[in-house]
Structure formats: structure tokens, C-alpha cells
Image (cartoon, rainbow, N blue to C red):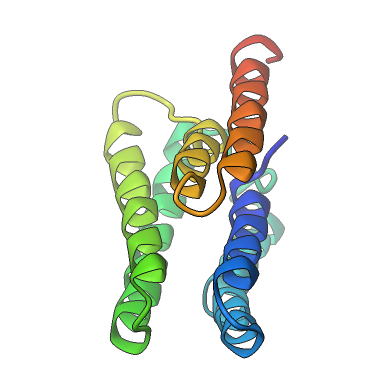
Amino acid sequence: MGHPILLGFVAGIYVNFKEFEFQKALNLTLLLSFCFILPLLGYLTYKIKKGEFEDYDISNKEKRKNLYVFLLILLALFSSYIFWSQDSRLIKSGVIPVYLLILFSYLLNFKIKISLHMSFSFMLAIMMMKVNGKAAFTLLLFAVQIGYSRLYLK
């Protein structure tokens, strides 16, 4: 429920088309798709086919370390390009919290298992407050449901 890849992609598309004129929104969505989402899905699919990951959720704490390293490298490259190529403060202020969330999740993963589903959905809800209060509230309700499912529906 609420996979971070899907949730982040849908939120990205929403923000792009809400905040920017059509051509810029389309370019940003294509950039997100081809420079982040597709490489991430390709990596996950490759690891699943090799038998290293069971599914796209990667529940095993030890196996997540590889995912976090890949995500941090991919996000660093993506963020560098965003900071170099985009003049939008909104876009730049969006990539920093995502990078920090992944970095702190990676570090905390050495001690405890972090639910990226839950942490990412709450982060998106908070970030969405800058764009649309109703959308943020909807994401917050969704994040609470994700949190409930992670805690009680094991």
C-alpha cells in the first residue's frame, strides 16, 4: 500500500502540472521519469530477476542497504542535474528533503528497520502543504493509513 515510487511519481506529476506551464511541467515529468523512476525500476527489476530481492518492497533490512546506496547515488546525480538546470526554487526545495530522508533512512537502517512507505508518505504530505492544503490533507490521511497498515497488518 502506498509504494514510495508510485506515490512520489504521482505527487511529482501533480506538482509539476499545478505549478508550471504545460511545457515545463511535461519536461520536468519526463526528466523525473527517465532520469529517476525508470533507472530505479530497472535496478529493482534486475535485482528481483537475479533473486537478490524478493519483490519491489525489499523488506529484508540487510538487502535494503544495497537499495539505499543505489538510491543515494541516483538521487545525488538527479539532484545535481536539477540544481544545475532548473531555476525553480520549488523543484530545488523538493529534492533536498527526499535526499535527506533517504540518507537518514540508510543510516538508521543499521540499527532499526525503517518503513520508507510510511516515512515517504508523511514527508510528501508535509511537502504538499506548500502547494495545496487539500492535497496535503489527503496525503496525510493516506499516510496515516499506511502507518496503520505497517504497524498492525503485518
